Length: 392
Image (tube, rainbow, N blue to C red; front, top):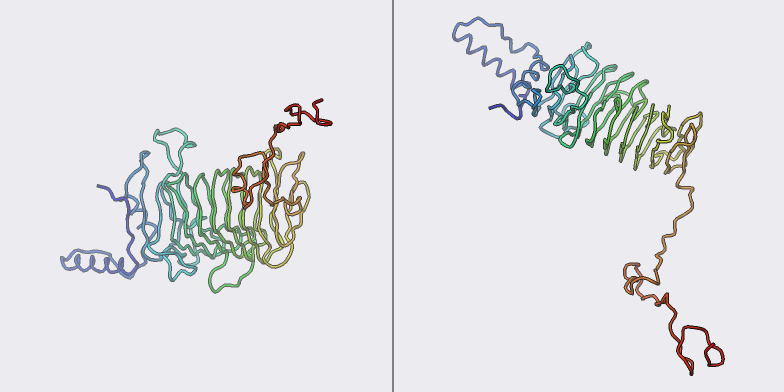
């Protein structure tokens, strides 16, 4: 029976296992090259652990890899399309109190430290466009990189996936902290910082905190932060993207759209130590373009939105805007300057007699019927006006 999860031992536990194995082999006089003090190839170790978990219907490895320590690596660790990587404890802002990975030495082979493979088809030789990374995930993991090496490239799809409590730090200039691809999953409580503990806090040129790769559908990013990045969140082709409670610090351009935004919503944003809010480099289809954005500039200063064609919009400390197409370009609608909404309850006098209860009023309204009441004036009963006590 295959396992649904594989637990990776701590570094000390692995060292003790090697020492014990060497002791047993030596006791039988069997020659061996085991050196408990030699560095362990943790990428190779975890790849073999993936072989011991279950398989998906397409024959790919599927299950969880559980970390119990922080592990040094010097090349990309590839996770299969349906594998979840999780730490045994909540990830902290420092490597010491977390489970995860850090780069060992100055050399690293690969663009990203962690990367999820693309799904494969059940039918050999066919395309894989309709196969998604169901079951992929990463949570409670700290990844500490080095300048120029990107952190995590995650692909996922649907509700069986999740990115949660992921901390990526130290990737420096011209690199990406977290790159996301796929559809219909949630990213939450996640932190991307181009610097790491002990390094100077300042913007790293060319760095991106979160990069949404290619076309993404229905991603929800909640309670995320970027520090010391040139770009906070960058997307190319986003459909129904929701970002809530996004905070940036020393991030020059918190938001950047490079191709098309269809139904992008950013709520409760907070940007600190920057003059910029959003840079829109291109609107491929203006008629189908829409970004809704609200939040604040946290340093009591104004913020700028740059948008096609060669236009800028400037906020006050708070901002609440919608950006839509206008002709071949875009326009910014400032809701804070729109006419106010009357919030006084309005009682519908022709509705149900108990309507005052729903309206918040304690006094029932006078009932005015839409049908005139009959009047009696001496000689007749009628709904018509009368004069001199007689019917007209």
